[in-house]
Length: 376
Image (tube, rainbow, N blue to C red):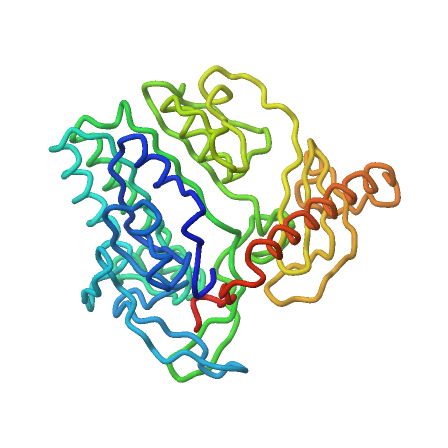
């Protein structure tokens, strides 16, 4: 999320699969760099459609950010690209455009009979909060914030259904591994209005979990995840062991018979777990966000400098939970479980020191300037 973006030396799932003979495409949100040297085409995607920054107007595809904020602002900038060429589709709802382009690519691949990897990062329900009237009408009984959030999610549901139906129509479903997940909990960020004013919105809910987006409590980081592969994965499973999005890459590589150890990547393959029911080896999973650090190991989760919302003050310096018996992380067990708290605190601090050291060694002297939501 820097102006210069993801270094070319960093492997992506697209570069890995392209090496194995897969065709690769992206349709949706990139948000891994604005510069030419960090765009999707440089990172293994042969065909691309979408935008580069953190958010766009869903109809004009213009990036609005920085109005009425301290520091440098960003003038409205059009941000819609196809294969690195700027294109204009004014008035077309972006969620529907994403699905349309994805389906076009699937049809092309079906004709070619070549294996393919398609990455479809929807930006909804990210702000700005826009939804077609037909979806708003489905939730007419809700307050506006909840109504538009539900409408945007419903539009994504329909878009995914269209993609799924196309795979079925083309007889590709049986041997296609599909993975669905999200990137964070509900947002309470400030939204921009065209007059420059801002206010926080509460359209989403974490369903009783603690925190929102930007929090390392489970309300900020616990996400849905679905894996679908009729040829290999038995249907109807519910997985209750700890997993993370970093597990997707090694799982996909395992599925196509590629040794993931040739790459310096995090995560572990979930394939034998979801296919054969094998237990996952217990491990520590870590997160960091600004001053926050968190670790989960087994049923225990520790959060350092935990905050609940974007730019919020820390609500607690050290918080230990048994998330199996207390999924809302409402009870702090630091005093009653001091040995576990001390063990996890050391794990979290050592892990964070390691990534800080790596950043300083690899990027501190480079031109990687942090840019919030694509601002330059």
